Length: 299
Image 1 (cartoon, rainbow, N blue to C red):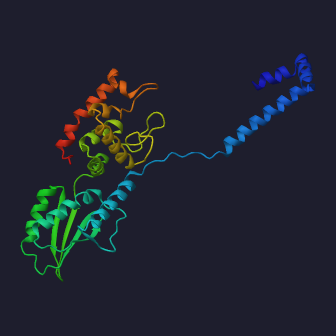
Image 2 (image 1 turned 60 degrees about the horizontal axis):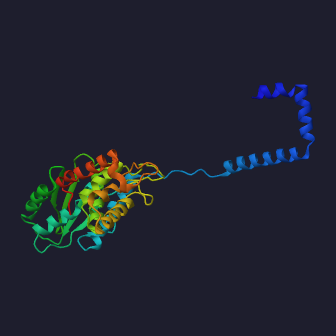
Image 3 (image 1 turned 180 degrees about the vertical axis):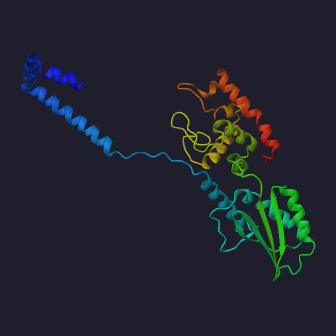
């Protein structure tokens, strides 16, 4: 284009034509306006701040959720927290089973004192204070915890001085994936909204495969591809939406279809049965509900 412009600019006829145009006032005005507009667009684009996409930090999100779960147990009066307890990076595999550990403790120990949580990182440490002799309760509690938690947890009870007995639990299995980590938030959200947690879990599985940074169409993103909310918030929003739909009498399959992530432009959710892909998707969601129930996801 530069070569052509230079070549044409040297032609006498072109030069005469350009001189005529340049002498015209209206032409000068249009040239000035055009240059100003292009300059304004360039400056605006240069000055406009770049919008950075928000990416969910999955480990940090579950650290925060796990720490909050520990505080909820403390607020319910089921355990005491040591003032110096570090909850910056609590291990979810231990936090999620903490209520089961406390219930097992209360089942074995008659007239139990309040257990004190002193550590919650890669090891769960609970001090059982106020017992001069723990007798055979240490053996019974260890057996019960091994039965309830399984062989992926290493359990030890140390009998110490000053009537302090320490329960130590470490998780020795494979690290939980995001799907496993979502189980407790799903159970909580399902309990609040009185819905089947296995159904909600299956919807999440088929919407995003538990990807909190999943991107969909029409600016929708997140684990449930909702227009609002980020991170775990979408689980609670999705549970509320599902509960409302079921409460007003919408069938389960029609309620599930409203979460279908691949509607094209102009498609209507109520016509999902006319789409083989949408119908297959709903069928898969409903068929996987039994899988999650068999793995203990029920209220």
